[in-house]
Length: 306
Image 1 (cartoon, rainbow, N blue to C red):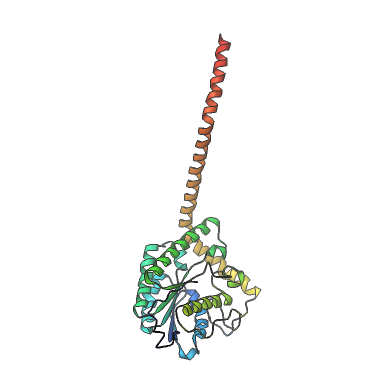
Image 2: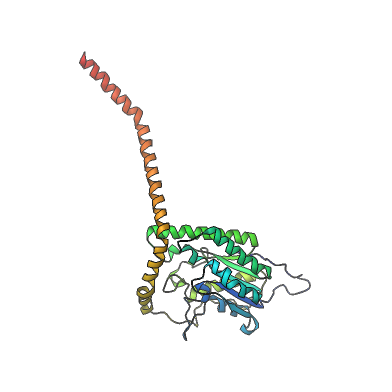
């Protein structure tokens, strides 16, 4: 986990070093919504409320979650940012981008422009901004080979955008690939697309640690012991697979097919080029010996003709 102190700290001699978070806003897609962490009475919890509870008594910190399912980076810029700015948060947590990697119109340059506008806007109102670098989701959710390579390449491009934004604006980030236990099955919900309750707790715990490193008070660190969420049964797994998982794989797979096909073509072309190079190298090595052998037979044939 990495964080930088991105606002000037108070003079330690005049005030207490640890600052209280007075307001927290969460932006992004279905993961910030809390999907994967269902509540017994219905609805979702997720890492936002867990992080909120770690900062102080809940009523003492203003909280807003402007995320919604399916959001892409452009959605955050065009539909969520204005509400977040009006809230004037001390801390903003941004988790978005995975939906972009699954679409046929993926454009890393456009994503960077939108991402930059969101972070610049939040920083302009004095917010400490935290975000994530994504993991290799093909280690969590099975995809056929060409689709897996397509998704991995897209996630790599998305992470390169994140790296550029982090460096440019000096914001904190949580590296999900390096998060201990991040690839464990228990970390993921039944759909293998969203964190489970444990996964959301890990996110909240990680963000809390980043805030602590940046000088904020986190008096009640998030526990990694599950509690308060709804238990998920084997029936939930089966129903999700039949009603949601396979249709989702078909829809997103169809979106990725053109890009996956281009990767498959590139892999095949590279393989052909490597195979041709190996054949040429073998011919080059065998050529002199073959010529000597043929020359020898010619000399023998010449003596027979005499």
